[in-house]
Length: 265
Image (cartoon, rainbow, N blue to C red; front, side):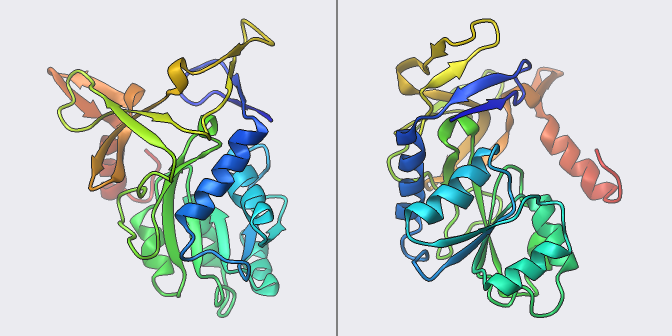
């Protein structure tokens, strides 16, 4: 497949993912979650297929591993999706934090009764979401990925679920941290493994595949690795040098959101 992404890099570019990349990632996720995933599980996937999370985690993973998946055409129907979760007997849901919070608010008593886990990615899981779902038996497992990595790189597990992190890397994934000037804790994360794309197709050279150097994909994320768990500090391009110090713009926004929770920052 070729999925188009701009990320924070400007002009959109094609990401070429081979069949081997996608199958490898589906197997990596299954191996990572072997203790809690099984053929009796039913997935609900409201994420679009043109999003690598919806394609691999929500569709190919269950299909290639003998599990049922129920597809829904849009994640925006907050009232209908909890009803679908209930009627399908879903045990797992793939979602983005904003959507997961919307479903939890719209759900009626009993809608999420069988839902064991929400596997959440693409944006940071907010504490408010955890508190909201803490009133149910549903556990949020926060993960992390990139389109270039088919996409899943890491995910928390039920038996070791650490809020504030995105969990340990999946089996078969190598990690490398490159130092960043002005940042003393952590570094820029590079990834290598069977799930890493065949290459980019750039707008100024259509049809030409540009593979990652020596198989390493530069995520552009500043992270720390603590006891094997990845904690995302921010995007490299989302740091500002102020008074000689590297300041995370994401951290500033998080503080502003805490002070003024009713506004977007």
